[in-house]
Image (cartoon, rainbow, N blue to C red; front, side, top):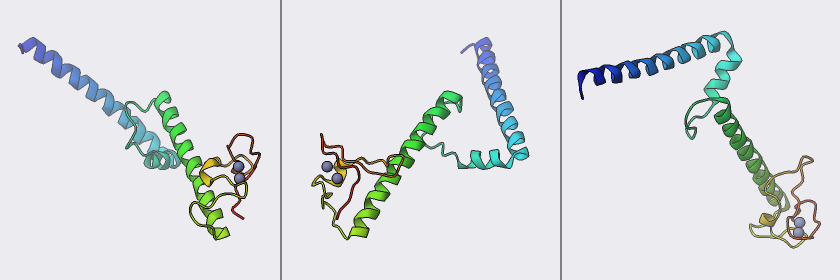
Length: 127
Ligand SMILES: [Zn+2]
Ligand SMILES: [Zn+2]
């Protein structure tokens, strides 16, 4: 690499790092002034996040977190009902369809409706 190219490479790298410095300084200053923001930043799990923390990527992460929250809440309810009824893994709902045939997510009113054709079972129940 020629010297002018090296100059440009290091200059660009320095400018990019400088933008990171400015962005991180702003976040640290705002977080220091706003404990709620500091807590939110500390709770964001960036393990599976890629790229910038811009609105588009934050909305993707938000949608994924909401889906994970709702799916696990539904599965927790499914297992809670099974345990409460003393049912075994694989025991069907009273509609004769399996627990897995029922929605894995709770409806707004806390139900796990059967998804089988025209079953009509509105809520998973083992007994
Ligand atoms: Zn059912
Ligand atoms: Zn059913």
